[in-house]
Amino acid sequence: MDPPVGTPADLVAEAAALDAADGLAAKRGEFAVDDGTVYLDGNSLGALPRAVAARLADVVTREWGELRIRSWSESDWWTAPERVGDRIAPLVGAAPGQLVVGDSTSVNVFKAVVAAVRMAREDAPGRHEVLVDEATFPTDGYLAASAARLTGATLRPLPAAELAEAFGPYTAVALVNHVDYRTGQLGDLSGITASAHRAGARVVWDLCHSAGALPVELDAERVDFAVGCTYKYLNGGPGSPAYLHVRRDLQDRFDSPLPGWNSHAEPFAMSPGYVPADGAARGRVGTPEILSLLALEEALTVWDGVDLADVRAKSLALTDFFLRCVGAYVRGGRVHSLTPALRRRRGSQVSLRCADAEGVMAALAERGVVGDFRPPDVLRFGFTPLYTSFADAERAARALGEVVG
Ligand SMILES: *Cc1c(COP(=O)(O)O)cnc(C)c1O
Image 1 (cartoon, rainbow, N blue to C red):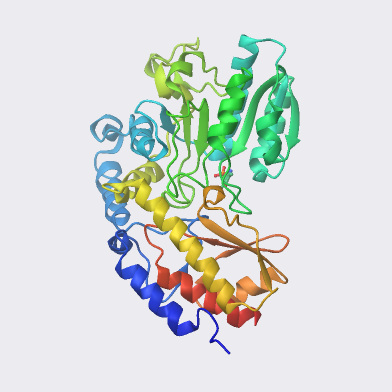
Image 2: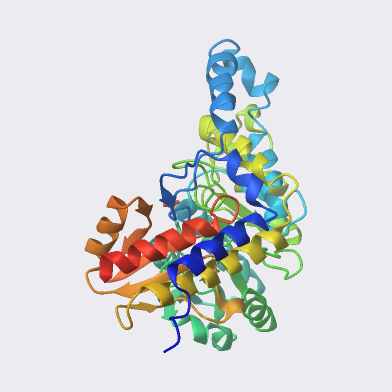
């Protein structure tokens, strides 16, 4: 009889060879990760980039502690939302001046969907429908429903696979997740955006699970609006502020439902009448979250010199390798992959359906393997190419085999 394919010794050796050949391997040293734990939850909370602690200490002790209010100008606090937006821009394929950072993803979903409906109505008053992927991350669905209610539009949830065909003369906007948070399926940004535009509708892309994990081409695809969080693959830290992207030629028409004083053309004129600012600043609302914004700014320095094509190549190699290890270590039928085998439909996580997934994930944590559980029966493993190693992937799969075996 032939020896089983992928015996542990083979896979351990293969992981070591893949790590040795990995052009991004040195990036791991820029993060607070250690070899004692396999951290596969960076799609929920990215690991800490080591440079952040010193920068935050300086922001707190000197910029706040000593300069106090002078820091709004002398430490460039006031312009941080646009400046940090411009640092994220190349990671999502956007030219500068189109992203602003502030508030949560939830709040930015609301701004973008309401503004998109208003814009679509201006183009054609009969556009009354808001499309949303029915399996969307819950907050997106809740906020799309509220945005529809406020604008007198109708919410139409439908399967992601049907979105591209669903645009018509009544569609105002579609809110779509680029990568499905539960299954890790990568959506067709190019095809859905083109369909929306052919029908004269707008599209809002939620990039929470794609930015920082794979290349996104907002400018090349002429995406109208995009939002995303910064504490997952962008490693900004717990609760770090989200971004809002409004395509440059739409900025003058962006009618924010939350026109706070920070988005005023002359915020310090303190005038009773609202005049919107030009450019990305129109997406601002109130006083920026300076501490978390500047932590994020420092966290983004890990991307200096990184080619997103290399990130994507490593991400796919990691998920391919992990799936192969799972196949070798986990006895047939115990887990079932929800993540597309097709590379062009795969984000940067692997989701496995498994009986007693919650208990299995707890047992994995006891063995130093951190992923997460999503009800009812999904194990999620996030692969963050800047700091996940192939040895991590092998170790996680082996632990899973032991736990469910
Ligand atoms: C993580 C995530 C969010 C998070 O929204 P918050 O307002 O930051 O809590 C929203 N949408 C999607 C698709 C996500 O994956």
